[in-house]
Image (cartoon, rainbow, N blue to C red; front, side, top):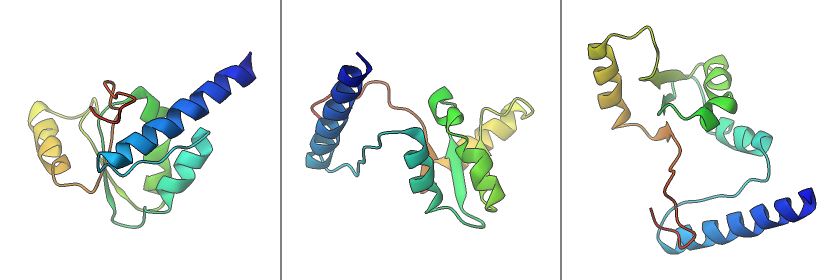
Length: 113
């Protein structure tokens, strides 16, 4: 049964990427989490600013920790130690970021949001 599930995920994921590209999105499909992390870390270096939107899925990839080890600046407005003013400041900074990791929950197979 796992083979059928993997086959379905691969087929659906690749079709979604194809349709996202038709709609002018830059999209990639990865078969496992380690591929995702490795791909992302290729773009991270000292001083790279990266924002996070609070996704549990993204947190499970440990991207923030890996990025900090490479000297990146992490902007996470969900940090419990932040005041409301600090959270708002971080969210404003996130509007100008090149890398903001979050999950889009309403993604259609047709490749639109």
